[in-house]
Image 1 (cartoon, rainbow, N blue to C red):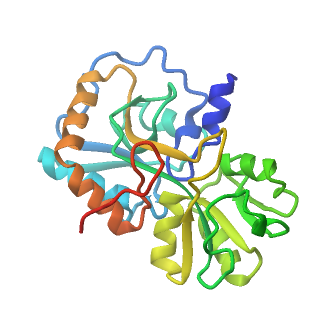
Image 2 (cartoon, helix red, strand yellow):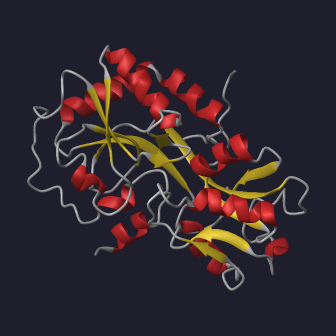
Length: 284
């Protein structure tokens, strides 16, 4: 497997599913928009990927899907399948649905729309922790600390570079969220004192902190030099070749960007500027 795909596989994918279709080659996929439903907005989603999506409709990706369906004047129809190997094969590629709401920009697994937000990884600590103002993994205060991290994710590479892996507690990346949620587990361990800090993809960690652990502090990791990067632009994913549908979604995103941004901000997703260098100022 190419190095680029290995790197993508470690991207912020508890929420996104980019890692989940590596067995899918886009060759042979229909090259027209004929497969896109005209009678409903058909969304491919994980039924238990809290806080992004779930089958109760409470996730922020659910709310974005509702907004798009309203603007299209179409009913919303979900195809539910757990994020994991086979997700794209059983959903988008099988023509059972037409869009994945959250997908990291790049790669060949889907045709990406224009990105509609940028976010990054966060270091989560107790609010009164002496580590609460740490914004870089090179900070000497992290030495000797037990830090929770998703195994194989980009922050794990930076932790290894800074000598933090030996004491780290790893959490699985590829799980069935119906029975296990690494983000919830990690924050539970932080609350119990089993770890000193937790590193999570911001669109997972930020909302979980806001909803379940308001006393915790989440700091964006914006000062990590070298690769892999710790910020990603998030798009919607459609079938390769579905250019007409892609352009329609691009238009929807452009015309409704303010409402989409408000949904994300209200959920607690930490938003960055397009270059991933500074927090995005969101007007209330």
